[in-house]
Image 1 (cartoon, rainbow, N blue to C red):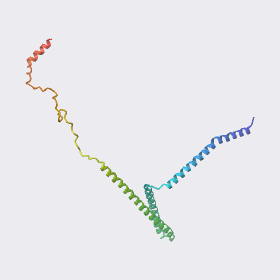
Image 2: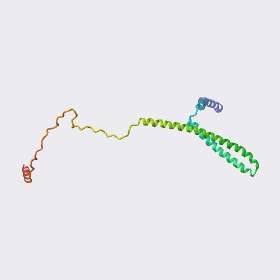
Image 3: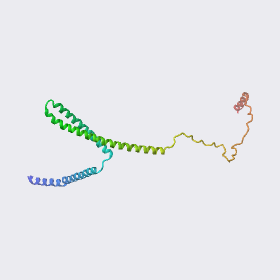
Image 4: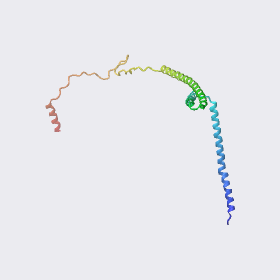
Length: 198
């Protein structure tokens, strides 16, 4: 009844089957997903390399280049100044001054060149924007209606005859004669007494 070797072998076979059924397809699926992701990333990077930069992207790159080389110039100038000051202590610091001076000079030249390119692109973009704005304002002025106040025309009165028509009077005209005399207070009291009697 003590058959641990047989149970261990069966357990190992079951574990191998579970491994083949569950984990191996997951690994293959994961490797397919990784391959697909790498293909997509390669296509995107190739497309970015092939696609020309727009003016906005070029301007942003030139500005970041200008800022980066300005920082590099400041650091190299600081190192060069520090090495000149340190030469008073030891003359070996001259070996630090010359590379820092060369880096500062080159970074200043690159920063200026990037600034000129950025200024050209900014000038072109500004001219294009102004041309679009002036074209839009001319178009708006061409289609602009006068905003002067004009009074609304009043309708003609309905009782006036139109030209060329004969209108009949709407009612008979009666002359107003002298009104009937009003009742006196004693006559009104007599009428009211008769009504109360009824």
